[in-house]
Length: 194
Image (cartoon, rainbow, N blue to C red; front, side, top):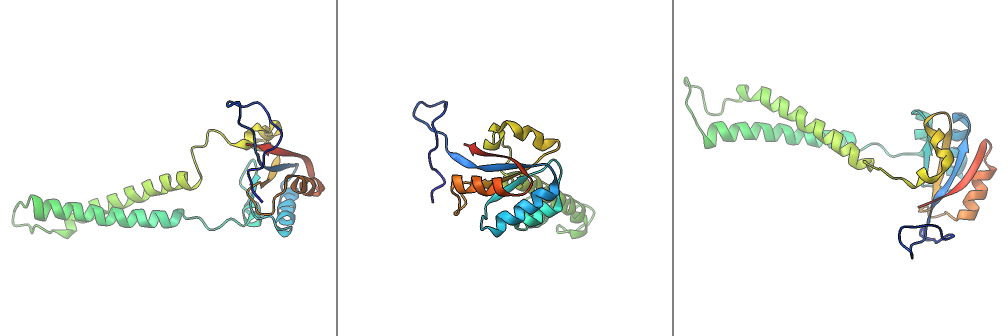
């Protein structure tokens, strides 16, 4: 089923453009109801779901079934690149490009290279961590379709939301809407337009 099904026409910047269903979202009053809703949604076969909470909840992360983070691998790769790059830069400058004999010191004096090598390792690993996290999270994201739901403003205060995305292979707007409405604790269900 295509996730780009047109729904009712609405106001738009382009006269021929029509909004598309991004997903169906349900509001919950407490985290336990949200977690139970996620479990039932996953058990019903929906795979592409998102949950929004005012604070991090480990059980929500586990119930949704997020894969392991790729950030640690990016940090390792960045650290290796920083280590090798920092060491090679010092070797190249001291032994190849500008070899200066100062007090009988060898051109390739590796003990003198360790502090800078350590610093470049930490620097590049930190840069990979920050920029890798931003890229993997899709940030910066000044707009998200869920912001069009007026009640979503309470997601940062005291409400919990569960959304089934339209790109899920099992998604049908009417069926997903009815499914979320039937979940215990779901107080408000609506379609999200993109």
